[in-house]
Image (cartoon, rainbow, N blue to C red):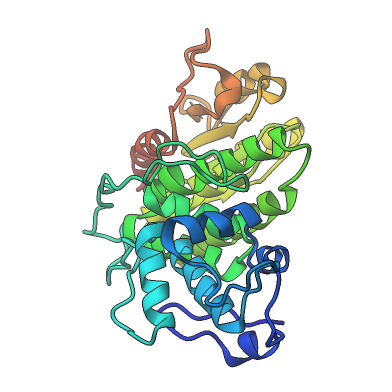
Amino acid sequence: MAQRPTPGTLAPAPEQVAELPRHGVTTGFLARRLGVSPTTLRSWDRRYGLGPAVRAEGRQRRWSPEDVAMLQEMCRLTATGVPPAEAAHAAMERARGQVGEVPRSTVVTPAARPGDVGVPAPAAPAVRARRGHPPASALPLGDVRQECRGLARAAVRLDSAAVQEQLLAVVGAYGLVVAWEEVMAPTLRAVGRKWESSGDRYVEVEHLLSWHISTTLRHMYLSTPGPAGQAAPVLLACLPDEHHTLPMEALAAALAERHVPVLMLGGAVPAEALDAAVRRVAPAAVALWAQSRATAGLALAQHIAATRWGIRGARRQSPVLLCGPGWGRRTREELPRPSGLLDAVTMLVPLSASTRP
């Protein structure tokens, strides 16, 4: 199996070049190897000059191992969020032996992680991807952050190492809330739109991206020091017929980043189990996720909100937050309805703090 260059490495691994035939490979073969379309390769040739070094008239173009190495560097740089024009210039400089400083993504991991005590999550810089005519294999991202486009490129190529590097870098630089709302979620939505419009193609892209996002969120949750004190946990759960857990995993990680104790029940929690958990744990608050109207059980949410426990004369209830697009804009019961991850975190942190002894 070919080995992907590590970040900052200018030369590809020797076996990546040696295993290719010296007479070169076709455009179709190279496109499949890199995970891009032949149209993208022709576009890079036309726009940036990233074509075969030797062109034989009247014959199908052939890409030498050196040409492949140059395009692998182009793919690596664009996967980190470097704009294509800058990446192409750097890749050609490397191919010519004029090695300088390689452009890097705007994401830089700080020494102190946002969310730590005394380290607020910084606002995301207004860096947007450049508009243009995307190749046929590109995801429909629209006006998004540069890191979002880099993550999408890596996901479409099924470059798992680059996907994981991008996710860890953006979380380390901006914190989980910004990483989720401005990079992870937009890319996931773009994959979903591409899947729906492509006749069930790109399912593998969605699975790869979802798995790495889930892995990153759970890693950040587990690596955060536990909260000090004995505050009641915030209970997170998906409705009985709801299997979309990633938004709740993002909320769990963002709360843990702020040292809020969390009890995560996951997807498709039966109504009886949810009711029993609330009575046993007496949570500081309950957040229920519904992705669609078909899974939004308003009667169950109302029942949980009315559940009381404790000794007679001092019985209390847990506030219930309705999270996700399935609930609509408002509900007649006026249960809190956060507009997104940041809004949910803003509501839940003080509710948890109020239960500390």
